[in-house]
Image (cartoon, each protein chain N blue to C red):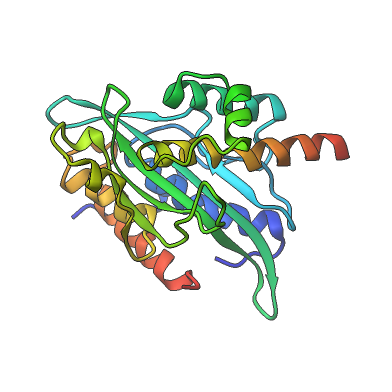
Length: 83
Length: 179
């Protein structure tokens, strides 16, 4: 079996502390994800989510997949406002 | 894995996840911050990353974890996972299966326990009832999901030591998890 050597560990990509999602990057990802799973924009998804439009069990899993990104929209914009 | 400060603890949390992801992809995980007192999200900068099976089928992996960092008496700062979603999709974007845990109950989310979805990408003849069931599971580590991709879906690995690395990181996860 292959052994994980120190050299191999050092070549692994590592998340860089400075590389965090900006508000624009977070919204772009949210928008692309809403389009991927529902063919609607991020803004349309937010409006429908707030209106409780995704309670149908057949779409709930996909809707949760998009909705999981909503806190990131809020945290990145709050971070920018505090700077 | 505890750290000396919030950012240190978050780095120690993300590093093994990034290692495990490197078994399939060179995409770098990104967080939305490194601060205490906030629920953060770690995910890819794109909705999914492409995987290739040994039969040359293209599949898509999706990964999201939410977490916060807390100060613990005597041990320092430690990350606590607040939710996760790992899913595998066909090339036509239909989900095959997914492990979810998103315990914040809302009208749109009545299921607060960790669960498995079996979805339409798993087969055209899967009954609607099965597609709608939230199959209750234990807490699932990303490494356990990754081993299913390698062993059952025959996803191509990018490193020869993938199984060893995933096994090591799974032990690390089990050592430090709080539930």
